[in-house]
Length: 465
View (cartoon, helix red, strand yellow):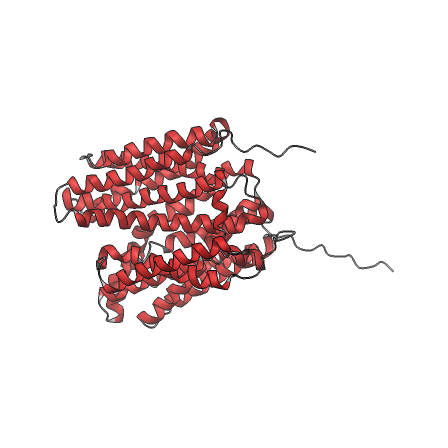
């Protein structure tokens, strides 16, 4: 009797590194889009729920604070439960929260669901980058620029126009519904195609003290930096949140340096290359986000441009960032991190300063494209070089720390430029805005000193046995 044929198990449509790239890109695109897509819809959301627009700002507050709350524990969770499980769990939570946002019966429920979205998004970014960087060797990561740049540059830039279009022609509910099929498909691909690490690094004991200090500290500081410009730095909520956040973060840093198993391993910053790359990420993020905050104000308040024209003048920066991924792929192996990042940072600082003196709208757009291309090349180079020597077991903690500094840098850049504009008074001329753009240029130029610590040679393939 002939035994029945054994049916081969079905192969996943995407497996291994292809699945990593697809799932990572889908998740990060959702996360990047949701950071900006809701802004144009706040008026409609407030109107639907019969609440003032100021109350609808809680929708964005909840997302930003949730994002900050998810970051500190991301590295430990990835080590403890595996980056695949944490990433897909966070992606599923983000997708479910998107559905709950779309179905929210009131502003409170919508804000709560946005907070869940934020926490899941705070986990997705560092854990997803860990998954991606573990799948590709250091010498292969230059080619990842085109993957990294889509969710980090293009999606946030597309958020406002897409949000306005969906709100005007459908309803604000669609801002969140668009995530559901994409997120569900990404989870399915991830479950069938992603492979867990053969051996996850030991997670160690959970640092409860560090968690109770760092998580609320980061959340309070993010709240204060984000809403200080709008509500006033001396308003009780902003002032108390900022001071308490700084105190908690100071205590958290002291604790992290003393404990044997820290939640966020700040001692990683002692590494020459990773430390330089992390502080560079803070400075470049501060410079870029500060410029993106100041430029629309300059062209509306001082130049008399419409909101649409101001938005269109900023958008070419995202196109420049897309082009930067191609530049890094070709030039990083030839020039090395130091020779590519150092002149890029100095040239980007000059372009940022020049923006304050550009009168013609097309000149502004050309300069913004140059900011995206030049600064984007430097930023991608720094990120790839910074993790070249980070061992796989430490990747999760390192990525969490890097993401925290980059996120804080963006908030600090906006807060610093807003504070400078506020200190200069109600002058409607271009002078205050030029000084604010000069501040962003100085922040980027300061990074050139750190770029000297980057390695001269690009990461090479491992030696053959």
